[in-house]
Length: 448
Image (cartoon, rainbow, N blue to C red; front, side):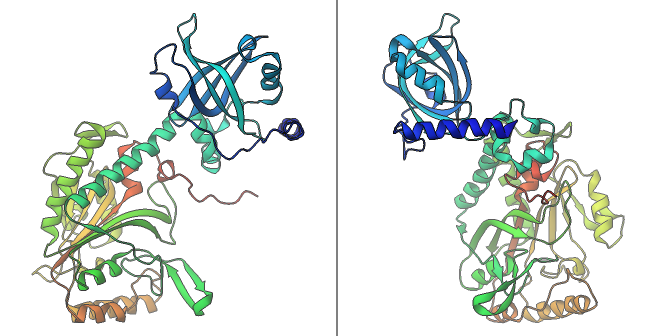
């Protein structure tokens, strides 16, 4: 059925061309958004709008339609008396739902009280060759919503609002860092060695250099090289890639905000994190809490704290940790991880744990931070220990990065580093079920 509709639309397209009408013009002088137009006084003239046709009701010599742009919808009206018989007929014959139209007209109010634009001029801005679904099945078919996110955004206002909210959350966080004199930088995404975290990388080939390379699993080691180079506060926001499983809280491609602060330790960063989150929640949501999974999550000035061993019941394993944090609903700092779990962090005086914390919210890891290891000899030994595990078959173990060790040998001041999973945070703050809900175009398995 869709093919038949597409055929009809293509015939209309050809008809427009024969009439000398460009169905895909270069631009349009759009002076108002729909929400701005709705605030104009009745009688305002020469109001130009543009958007997608979402409804057409032909009543003979009078036609009402709705156009939708980024800000919302507005009603427009075509009256044969105002635009003439030929132009009225042209609109009815050549325009379909989904087409983009530009209009100029006068604001008036219908007898039902609806603010409307009485069209005086109009033009085709883009002919849609596929009809919009009458009843968008993506409302119930989650996978199709992700595959056709553009349709999801057209029909589901709450989806678009969620991504606008994501933008506000990220902007608040980066504005906070800028206010603390952090410098935004860019580091390589294609790396000769995947480092900065314990994870399996994506491997690819750099033909120009005849070398095997990796998509970065973290920007950490390059950001710390900048600290060695004399920058004292740097941050980066960007994509990282880990060749791992997919579930509600994991996706191989994800967005991270990571920063490094010279002359600070993990205690300083816990205070900074509390200040950042309290300010962001208030700024974006106008309150100090959010609702997620039916639970009220409050962002108080001071977050709760527990040690790694308290959370795991004394067990030294990542599995025990993941099980233990499920009970942590309110923002909680889990501190002092075992040394072997964080090979890039500075040891506590006990020698068994490192100066580290993870911020847990609603049972999910949101932030990982620690006092950075800046002893090159200690770092080399830990790399070698990791490399032994790697050679035994541990694909996630860290390889020895001799170039980074060399950088440390030139001296790095006391430094603390911090990384935040943007997708996980947005998932919680928008009360979403999965990370894919807050990623515009998540990777999807090819259809058979």
